[in-house]
Image (cartoon, rainbow, N blue to C red; front, side, top):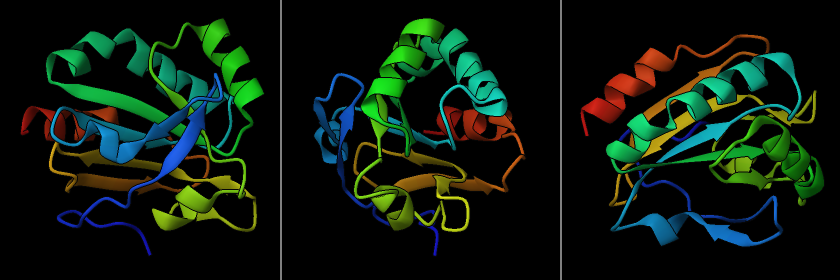
Length: 152
């Protein structure tokens, strides 16, 4: 079952593409978090979505929002992708145990072994303020979460 709006966001610790641990609760009290689950690095829809986020990153920073991407890719592939695309926000590896955080958030696709496109806006108190899950192959409408960011 997916994490719902109004609920406490499940805490987690995952390694970023430099194999440094990132803990969701470390942002509590200081920054809102836009948690963006995506299937795979280097895939077409995912790259288009994250490049749009990259190009509009100042809008999130100005709203005190830390963007954090999560996929089941290894840190090594995430690092190569981040360097290639110039992503300046953390990309976290939910590789092992495989998809454990995606499962916690209700976005893990067991049949395909990947995270579906799930987007969660978490406020500074750790409460989910926006939640959306897209079906495989379905791109996100980023305007929906931008409205949620504006409402913070």
